[in-house]
Image 1: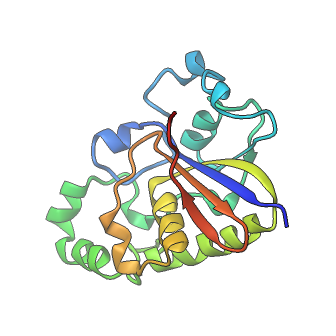
Image 2: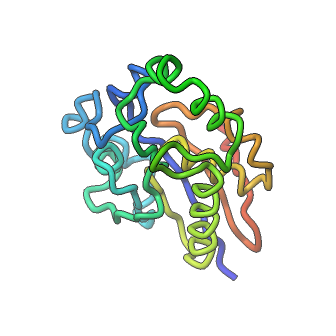
Length: 187
């Protein structure tokens, strides 16, 4: 059985992240075009690049490859009517709804997706990736990377909000019978 290696990269910073807002399909704030292909040295030629469908993921994937495969399963959590709103505005306008969403992973924003639903979607994607040997790089979102971590560690959904994912963070996994976290050392 040939192993699957999966490297997840969080998309680069956006204006929504800087302003503590739920995301829209906004571009990156860095000059991504000037940096395009600047990080390809981190990857082997055989690494195939996947990304979420949003502009911020496609632009970040462009830092690693000119040919990234868009995968719907890597899309961000759907925040419904909260898209584009700041956390502070929600705290003032819908404090009970925001608190319920933060405390209950089965609670979804109005018209959106729950954390439990996101984790289920990501678990199905990981099952599919386990059948695709080789090294893959997936550019996606903080929520998706959190969901991947919960699956790999078999952690409870209540752990979801205990993980912070910074822009351009990297998570390495391997699969040879089960998903395992890989921490990279430097000699």
